[in-house]
Image (cartoon, rainbow, N blue to C red; front, side, top):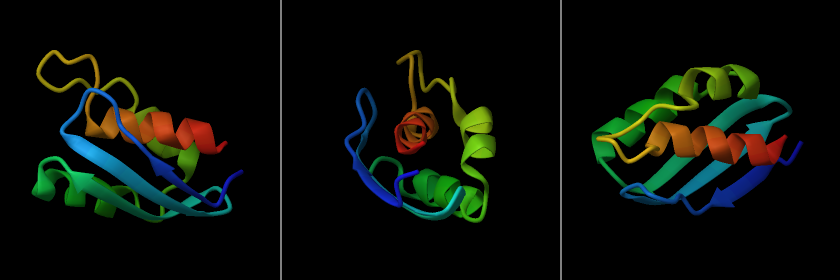
Length: 82
């Protein structure tokens, strides 16, 4: 499993997601752009969570009919880290 990743989201307001893992546990997530309060909330909620649990909870969340969202893009990034 990769230890860190800089991910460029597609179809969302956020422009970048920086992720740092410790084994299969999320240590830090930082969003650049997007709705600041919401992305800070997502990052705080997944801190300390196992990667697979975060993917299961976030994958498929839609924002205003875009077919994706910041949480969904985080799940996609985490899948790339497996």
